[in-house]
Image 1 (cartoon, helix red, strand yellow):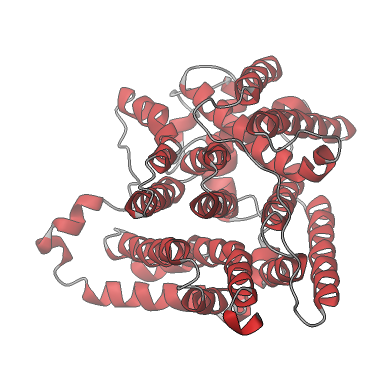
Image 2 (spheres, helix red, strand yellow):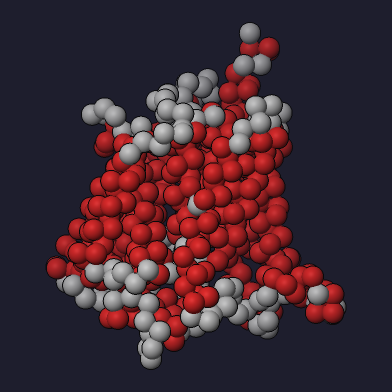
Length: 462
């Protein structure tokens, strides 16, 4: 097992190096002070980039073995390190201090809660045995093993297409197969630790990104609310890719909203990277990511400056194209066998499904707002949207539109789904809808920061 741990560490070092290349190319890392602060974001973005490379690589027939992964990582890192010529430069800024009573205590307490929760998640991930969720052993892990043993997307007996849900994108199985090659064998018991590290990288990345614009006494208590939510924390070491998809969509939402506020085009680059990774991780990642890209782009174009660069975000979800081409070349449907989107327009099919729609919408609403799983994350975000509507209408519009349409889309999949509705909701509803409160909790500190900034600039304070 020592070799396996060293192999996992080496894989994560490679991911971090690729992430640093992207951050350097975008101008996030320029001085000696920045690298250590940017370490979590480098790991998280690097993991996304290496995952994208592995997923597209297996579609092209490239094995995720150690030499191939290192070559792909070097190529992606070299490309990422080159600054994008069409973007505006990134400016390092520092959030102004707020005048909240007990601000230092709030910042210290919130940061301590976040640190303890993340450290406990890593310990739990390291101590956990292999994930025993049914979906993990039914198809996610077997797909990774198939890629590992067959060195790619083999279509024969016991190959990738043998297992349920063959249309699911291949980023997670391909990345897991790459880690197995670095470990020197299949070690499912180490995957919970890797998931915990990805979660830590995500949370700390969000904190670093937000601290550019929002004061610490707002950022850390709000992040503590998210990290300490039972559904967030307990799923940090779960190998199922729903949480990873939510991480990627949340990071994309935060970066896209900052772009709306700051007009700094370089932010579109990491936003596009995480959108691409989300699209290649799960079907929901593609659909919800495309929805986010279109909403942000249209709101930016509808503004006074009529910015068009936002449509470049659509390049992120478009990264799923190689996977669609691979499925088409092998005669497989492009969407899940559990539903068919065309049935939304078939009145004959929808007739008599009213009870199914009512049950799905009420169950998903309950799961998203349940205090026992997400505490007050979603209600506080919606309240912050209402209060910040005048201060930042485009940001609030993007958040509320994405949450509303995203919820409607998730509900529709259960409405038109083929499996029995109670079983369908029991096995997937809670973890699928969890993406919405997780994204909401990620952008909550930004909304609160906008509220505090607007209040500090009000005439009453003059």
